Length: 548
Image 1: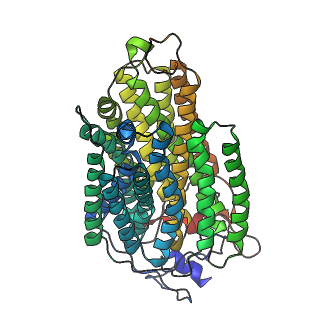
Image 2 (image 1 turned 45 degrees about the vertical axis):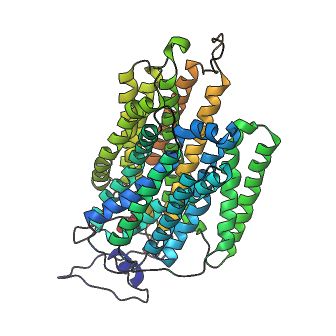
Image 3 (image 1 turned 135 degrees about the vertical axis):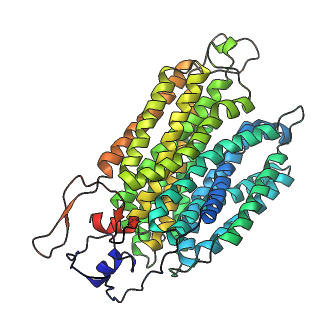
């Protein structure tokens, strides 16, 4: 009982995901600290703007690593004499690396300390960027991209630092700002890559030198500004569970990313999906038996965490559907296809995609305010509503530059609100010692959604092409395929609304007739709870609104 009361006062970690009894508050002239056998959590610092900005820079560099190569894949293929299948591994390697390392590094951050783990990941990212900038070998370039992919773990580690160092009342805004840099970094990477490879003799190495410089800047800033960790959970690292999860994610993401090349019904694709099903079953059995599992199965299926990860997958799907769909659409020559704008890669990035990235960075601040005012669940639903509007606009009217840009900006607001809400939902649903791994899994859910979105849109565009094209003109998708792609992305946001309003609805508690344990009824809004001193804290919300 005492540990439960200490948790409500912010003095002890949340005991379990199960419901626990709450004692009615007693009148008091001052704050009373109830002693417990559980170790008290350290007093939180107020945090600082410099800390938030540094972590935002690190998160921005992470997002840049994911999209930096997309405009230069053709240049890499020509310079290295690679086939289309070979050059696709430049992006696939990063995706698989992120899937393998993000959960493990998030867990290591919880156990060994966030700052040492952050610095280690940044060192690996610097080394990978330098290797990519100096090699002219496809094999070593793929190795470099694997090293860069490990940097995806920086985002959940940054959220762990924020949870430890930022005052509870400022935490939603801080998380929203750091999350908002993800969308901005993706757009900035596209523009930067386009600018650095313009001219008659483009050199892709310059793009990776830019990545190396930014990674070094982030490394120095983190070393100087981020404080040393004050808590470590310790414990043994579940290497077997980490290997099982890595294998599972590879078996899922590899056929998703390569299915279009291999064929969705090919033996290789179907065998990998079947292997993923078997591996998932074995991994769950192992994780339920080990003493210190990599992923607590209770956390994995805990309702707020589970449905937030589903929302992450859907938002990731919609984001890449917009990115790929708009990018290909605007580069289509209108004089040949009858639609499109004939834009260059640079113009497509600067004119059509960058405004969406910029608005997402601005909207992130409003997302943080909404999380504090109306709760993360309603903020997620509001963002999804913007997404429905934006994709409906793109579906029905993508024949003018203004429509594509403005609809993309509406979608940018949707993605920004989603990124602001999901970390708050995760933080409110897990104890301190699982912040890194929980946000790592959520990052992987978004990456998986992005991979699915990329595969689906690419397959749709290739499934129906225009007839009677002039000789020498490559196959061009029928306009109806873009319409269908945007409509599917809009449906994804409709599902996000359902997840937010139904799946994430936290049920109201009433006293149990037996022991006074809260039991659930429906439709309580999961806003961030306020303590007696006026501080808003997701952990206290989790304690007062958790379901068994």
